[in-house]
Image (cartoon, each protein chain N blue to C red):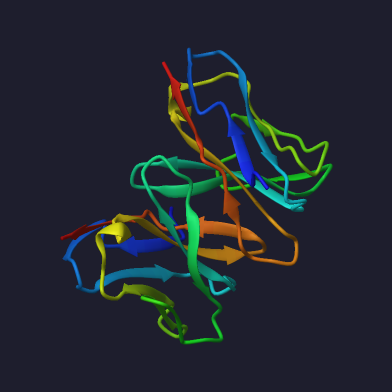
Amino acid sequence: QQQVKQSPQSLIVQKGGISIINCAYENTAFDYFPWYQQFPGKGPALLIAIRPDVSEKKEGRFTISFNKSAKQFSLHIMDSQPGDSATYFCAAQNDYKLSFGAGTTVTVRA
Amino acid sequence: NAGVTQTPKFQVLKTGQSMTLQCAQDMNHEYMSWYRQDPGMGLRLIHYSVGAGITDQGEVPNGYNVSRSTTEDFPLRLLLAAPSQTSVYFCASRRGDSDTQYFGPGTRLTVL
């Protein structure tokens, strides 16, 4: 049973549009919430991360929104570019162990 | 720095064979982990280590062994390969005082 539920499984967005990926968790002991980006044939790479005492974090075109009471967090990709086409994983960490969501494949159409 | 390296990149085994997936990092990271990635399931933690000589089980440890004799290396052993172990395996490492994990390029394993 996955501890982090991620949706949607895939999405298609036009260039310049906004991509939104949602994740939910149950374990309130999680204390670190990263997002990873993975290109085909490559290992995941850290994109952006947030701690539960912060409600939003922005780095360039990528923003994490965090709702501690709802136990949900989301990734927003603004002004989506073809180079953003990849699989995105949310994750949650407890006691130095990461639990991953199932992943979202994002396709940005030019 | 080479970062996290994994060998081999691809491997095909027959059921019942054994093999070792190699992982090495040159960043002097204390923490190292092994994950497997399967379609629709994300990455799942197999085993991890918080330092040389210290290992522990993750979410899906059955069928896998690990040891950590040096800071740099963290091999993953499959003793009796089964088709259910067909997957992509990723090794990761991080500093003890940081949450950022660095992943290797992966090993694609097929068990026939």
